[in-house]
Length: 297
Image (cartoon, one colour):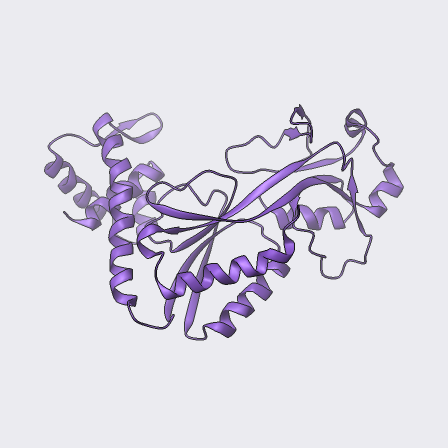
């Protein structure tokens, strides 16, 4: 079994293009194509075919892609687990985070980890959907919601944050404060876009939902909060109740807090094969300790 062939095949499956896959992996397109063709020869059946939508999986390719992701993840985890046995946390920890987490929340957490493990380097990537795509090069991911990453992962609940409407006091002074859901149609609305959801559908605390027409929809929580601070409208965002740097107390005001919103689960996940490594155990403990004061009943 050749892991590079698997990686090439899965990259084409994810991107729908040999060119994009080659660019993503940093190899020549001819090299990537040879690896895919070699894997198809081993399988004895076509795994990919061209369509109007680009390169797509055949039925056999779809089966192999599901299993191949697990193979890559387990292989990567196995090598890392052998390498790190008996060692203090050193080397690189590859972390995948959701887009737009507030920097002022991440900086003190990084400082605590850096102080505890000075020989450990963090390589952080951002994704609009951390549970989707190739995860064989990820040691730890943070996610909103209860969707499990594909493969063998251990997940830990960190906290549940309040997802609610916020606006700046200045905006409400200019445009008025909504007193009902119907009033929202008179306002400039902005919406967070969680993975797999529709930013035009907002939840109520009663467990129902209603549709809105936001002027801005984004997966970037930080961008939405900054837009609120700039007085650009009312936004539905998850909120860990951390003060925004440079914002005076009372500058951000909840809107319809007893009507609109929900609790949003935040979890961390690590590959099962890596869960016992010192660097991961330590990082998980630090994240849990950091999040504990932010937890809300």
